[in-house]
Image (cartoon, rainbow, N blue to C red; front, side):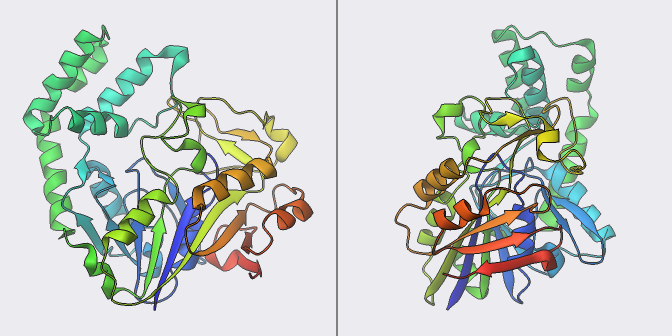
Length: 367
């Protein structure tokens, strides 16, 4: 019997997916599958002995010894990969990572173009992270995969779209060192991964945790909030398709876990119907991961509409045959209507956590 967990964010991201992936990956012979997104994902894990890391290219079970798999739905970034790999080595962790041969690859030019385009939007900016995810996808769709052609591809795009580069951006775009550094990072990444095309290798693992990025409200198909979305499937769709691609040797025991804080956050631009002042949630709390930055500004806060939460989660899971669970994190920061919550999710497994480490997670009810 294969034990499969699917961890998905229920809102706009920043719910605690890293915490729950860390919790589920404590068992031996585990692997974490990063089922969407790319280096813009930022999933925070704090170990019981106080080591803190924000995972981008590696599964949030890495500190537990879990392997990582980046399927073709993931966008790799050699620059970010090399930085993070070295950070993990400094924390005395040697990652074990598998990468599908068909993953798209982000370059420094995609990242710079993303930031230039976002700056050009002014007050109409989309709240992009600046990692070039959408630009990478669009470039591949346009058939531009030769690294030597990417710089001119963007310079021509800027000219067509009448985007004027500042002197600083001109200097950076024309820096001859960019190519050399990218090749170094690409070589480093290729030296430290296992290339995969046949996904049946996942049969080697007893515990498989799918770790989705962002949240359901940011899904590319959630047109209600267009264009303030992420260009990927943030819920069950990708894990389900990956599972269906594989010829499994054993029966599957699947649990889908949607993660939410007891309140809402949004880091970036876009509508936020229940937005409120942070003081209405908790004036004393501080988020060390979602710090203010030029691309996403300051973390925003709001009240959690439980009926809407239930609606979007049940719409995402649909009739998929699995155990259903929901994880509440940051429970110590805001008290919501727990009676209504438990009535809505009657029959679901419920996990709760006040803290940052996996040993703070408690399973409070069982279906």
